[in-house]
Amino acid sequence: MDASPLNIDSARNLSRPVPNLTTTPPPRGSEDDLRLARACAGGDSDVFASIYDRHGERMKSIAYHQLGNVADAEDAVQETFIKLHRAAAGYNGEAAFTTWLYRILINTCYDMLRRRSRRIRETPIDDLLHAGHAANAVDDVKRMALRKLLSDLPEQRRTVFALFEIEGLSHAEIAAILDISEGNSKWILFSTKKQLQEQWKK
Amino acid sequence: MDINCNQLDDLLLEGDRFSLDLAARHAQSCEACRKRLAGWNEISATARELHATWNNELLWPRIERDIRTIRAERRGTRTRVWQIAAALFLLAAIGVTAWIAQRRVHAAAFDESILRASAVDEVERAEKAHIAAINHLESLTSTKLDQPATPLLVSYKEKLMMLDDAIAECQGAINRNRQNAYLRTQLLTMYSEKQRTLQDVLREDNNHASNQ
Image (cartoon, rainbow over all chains, first blue to last red):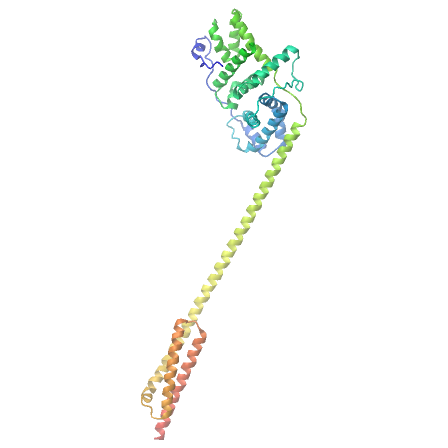
């Protein structure tokens, strides 16, 4: 892994705006988020249903890329909703509700990984998944290879890569979810992709 | 804007649209960077296809059931807490009531003892007046009894001495227990007897004088 420090000076030599490597304030919870959390604390099924409708798919995908199989991913999503119900009374709007929700999910996945003391299963499950693209043999091989490389990554690197590249979250959102700086999120993604690219060639 | 190969990493690190466009423009004129950028973008493109979606109609019902169970447990816990609180409140109310009742009983007993003490004072005042009258009567007979002129007066003198001893003993017992009504009755009886005896002494003395 390339662990060299970020070369900020060379970046500043470019005649363009200075790269944004500082931490921007994470998105805070709105009044709507607080109302949502209060409804969750009260156990309003409709609210949970709407959260599931809005975020369920992405939650399953995030959990799947952490845990490596559908059953575990569904367990993680289920456990996340239970934790959400239990912890909602303590939500204070410090982070956006969605950020908080994903943070619970990621931590649940980490807990499950540690609890089960096993790494991502390597069994391909593409037949279970409905990818939104025209599948062909070459693409399948690429996806399987990338999934294999991801499964070998440390937790944090895998999470940053999956949230940014697979789920399309911004660095600000990732930073808030993982409680790291935005610059750190960028650096982790860059070094992870660099590592993957080297392994990809092989 | 010209950049060199060494700056490619910084652009990829920044990763925004502007930086990647800049890197792409540079890659058009640099074979090594073009290959590197292609590999970089290929990873991103493949990653985007990894977004996993599947339907499981049973997942939401499972989650909903769990949430309902927790809600029911919480309600049960809340009910138990209320029950415990109600039991504690009831215990406290009983305790306070018992304490108040005990205080009232103590107060009544205190009032009663005050009343009893005042009654005893009144009895003692009456006794003192009675004793003073008897003592006055005794002083009238003392000269006759010092040197009794008849055998009957001698026996009266002995009787009065016995009564005085009994009165002193009874008075000592009363001093130890002022509120003993029985002892006071006994004392009153003895004083009454002493009074009658002294009156008899006076009568006997008069009879003896008239006979002479």
